[in-house]
Amino acid sequence: MPTKRPYSIALICVRLPLLILWLILLPIPALLIRLISPHSTLATEKMPMLFHRGVSKIFGLRLKVSGSLSHHRPTLYISNHVSYLDIFLLGSVVPGYFIAKSEVAGWPLFGKLARLQNTLFIERNSRHARAQVDILQQQLIAGNNLILFPEGTSTDGAHVEPFKSSLFHAAESEPEINIQIQPMTLAYTHHKGQLMDQSLRDYYAWYSTMPFLSHFIQSMGMRNADIELILHSPVSIREFESRKACAENCWNAVNDALITRVKTTVSSNNEPY
Image: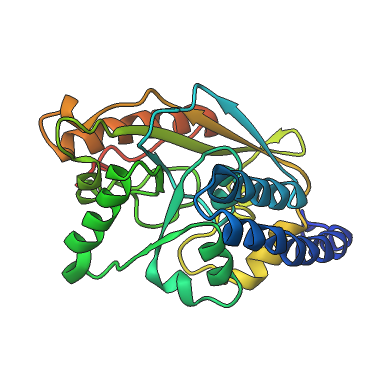
């Protein structure tokens, strides 16, 4: 007998119109606020967070947060990366500018939405790497919080890829400027109250060669999912001998929390480079 699909066509039929309505209605006041007061907290933080909370609600994503969010400015928030859904989850509670690959800027609809949410786009080409990291550093020095996925890719949600320590250069600054780094762990743990196995998690995790559109639609039809966001203690890059040591410390915190939540193991050779 064929396996029963875990997503609901009826839910998709309800949620898709709601999402379209939300994508049409919310940008209107958001744009007006940005025109009137572009640098206000309402424009740069509160409206983007409201947008992300709405999308999370439409998708049936329930976020449980543990730990204390750093309210220091500037803070570089770093997290493991599982899915495009991470953006909505983190964006609903973390005040900061997301960092995205430059290709996203050209995506239909999503590129425009990303710009509206104050996303910073960077080139992944190694020839531009140092210049792009310098741009991030200037944003931090200016007092802006940033949200970064240092794995540089998304995963299956059951392991953490090595962190690219070169990205931690953005948190280096003059002594008078204290830039904090707060590691965060996103764990997709439960579906309809039951612990997820990988087959279920794959309806949320978007990675490798998964086609986007079909995954997006199926995710929308999934019943309520519980996701944990674990906020770890902030650190400063000055506490470590090198960027690599800082990246390793952050990776360990993120990885250990993920293993505990998803009841899985990670290869011991996943070390930051």
